[in-house]
Image (cartoon, rainbow over all chains, first blue to last red):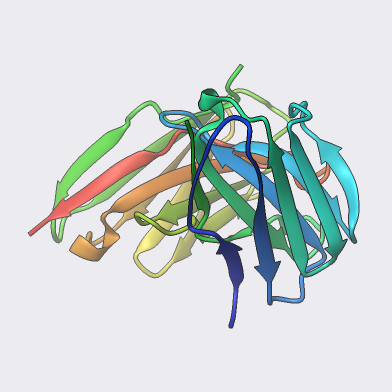
Length: 115
Length: 114
């Protein structure tokens, strides 16, 4: 496989459920990101990991918990979400944060619906 | 406060003609700008970028123009093809500040009809 792979592609969960989104990049990049795309809103940065260390947490509620066990894998753990959290969650990677070449490579996203 | 704005949610163009997508930004510290293209059920893919030291960058049918004084950039697609129909996102960053933070616009849906 090449590029950035996200699973699952679609997820429906109740407000009391716990689920995890998974992202894997096969590009040899050192930085990984979670973005959220809500309807009619711009892409919002949630978290940035550089060399497996979280370098940014963009005021995201604690019901979203990221995990980056190595430079190729990124998770987003979800618990007690709200219906307004329904959105497309996009994972991305880049060669290295701060190189001046901030081209992101995105996965296909997980379309999340919270009931 | 949205720092990157795409004020046209949609654009419809005939095949073979020019498509012009516009983007405005408010942060004068932005020094690198990118365009991404997104098809349904896929993630955005990088299209073209421009550094603030340039005012034009060309790649095949795609050209990006940057007007720093007006804080405006545009993407020109010539000639437009039906396969170009997608959502186009403008993004900007200040490479001297918080690492890896791209600010995105809301996107413009381009439809190219035969």
